[in-house]
Length: 242
Image (cartoon, rainbow, N blue to C red; front, top):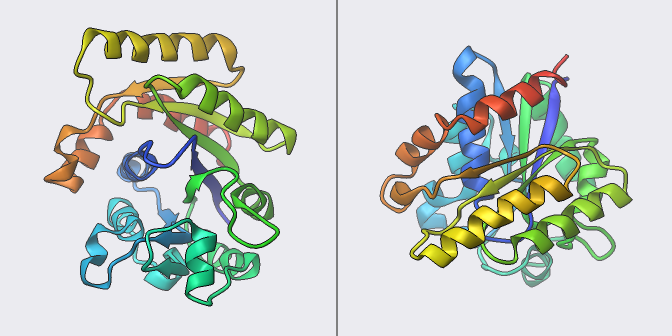
């Protein structure tokens, strides 16, 4: 079975899917077989599946894995996973996600798993995203924002990983929104600089804002995958691939 890497965010809306898709696109350049998963996704519209995270990850990885394996739990309601699960009377189970992950991981050299929201988002009555990472035995890439507040969110997330002895591969800082002033630029650059002095693991970025993502998602992914950050991230991943 290949290795698995979990991408979590310091918050929702930090660009996890874009980073995961660009990483999948980059890793498959050398012919590597890349699997992807979005175990739980909410706000999925039946008439617009091509806009779902699971679909976008599958396309970026050029994966042929069956959609029910990639995203075993899809919910229409755009709420937190546990709330959507309860509203749909469909409990999310660790066992089912683990079964789907094992099937995908046995087919691929590397499998990228994208979480929902942040690390402590509950998925069941007694377990959360962090418990899922432990159950699957994955190393983690944290995606954080460069904007004001990014330092606290990143450090809290990393501390939560350290408490449970989960291996952090890297912190990737992403410019999730356009910078419109000199002050915002100063906030972004100082966030990156300070985190490099505060975090023991590699701090990579910032990734530039993907301006064209709203009009052409695939082109934005292809463009972002050419950023030098992914060379560094790919090198880190190569060290843990058997």
